[in-house]
Length: 301
Image (cartoon, rainbow, N blue to C red):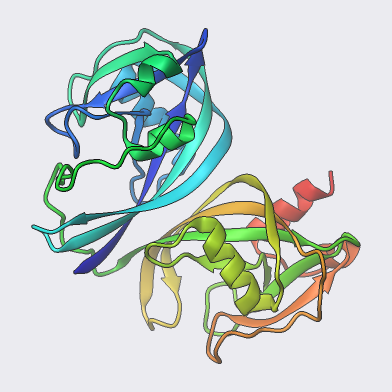
């Protein structure tokens, strides 16, 4: 079975105790099922831009993003296509700015409604939407999913990478950073611990795995901080040729309660050259990646 990846975005918008929901139509993957509005992130697109675009298309409302509420993953199998699709889903809290509620005129959905949670509980809900709303999760019937469009052939020079990274600190306030190895984009710069998640892996699980591999630390995730978007149309790495990379990276705050010496435990030839603990002042003097500089700058406010 071919393993595919995708990133989806969904918006949580409330009005007087009612939440905005949409119904999948005949052009959707699961016709008749209700879910939070949203859709797929396009190549190179920032997830926040994607959720604003999809909410407007599916409901007629213009919104702004308040914060990233949750990041979860699920896998849907399509036996007829011999594909297992891993989707990383980002849910954002939204605020309404204008527009008039309407049904979509095209695309995967055919109805948009404000519903109370009690009303939502009586609807056939997509599992991820039920979970985000704190409602009982009912699996969809076997074979309920169908691809709205045939899976296109994989682009030979495009890559999508969903990663989970941590602003990792210890009780003394030191920050754990990892140095990117030679042969990888950003070589020599100091980076947040973390990396790409595996197919079928939840973001927090992938981050804690990477924390052990890149720094030899056991940590616990305490907060979801946000999402970073990176597009490099000509990233040169170990593949030996420039590739069009799109990286979607969620950032968590992680606490290591009992820090030890930072040691890289992953196999030789990996993307991490070394790791170390640094005070905030020491980290400020290092050559940092953009995502590391941003996260550390916010932590020092």
